[in-house]
Image (cartoon, rainbow, N blue to C red):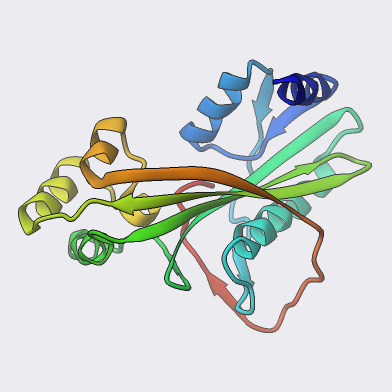
Length: 203
């Protein structure tokens, strides 16, 4: 509790800039009780070196997003950039291409566990700090009827792993949301040779 209060006091020393149009990220910021403005750039690169694994991926992408805004940051501003991926069995699961792909993905996720990993980067003119938050998620065993119902009712094609559309929708799928863990990340050397692109549930 004391740590949270210190963090909020430090945030209030800056004019907060959220580099995201995500409704969920705006909701989280509003829940902190801090004032902020939204600034976004089109076509920010979200590719990453194919040598990265798990938490390294959204941490890297969140820093790359921050770099795109670097020249726009004022001395009294703190920029918040973030990226979220779904990680299952050593691979990133992105947004389904269409209804059939959504059904195929839910069949794969049925009765299985995956991780939702968010990388966050805090950047000012003088410093930068990034960290990741990981949540373990386990899906219920879904019948074919439940899978089709979910896809047709909630149309989750714009969500990574088809999740996080609403509390009611998530209750249909999830049997367990494990505790979060936070990992601080040091800035890594950039590698430019091989890249993959991932569609995530937030921007």
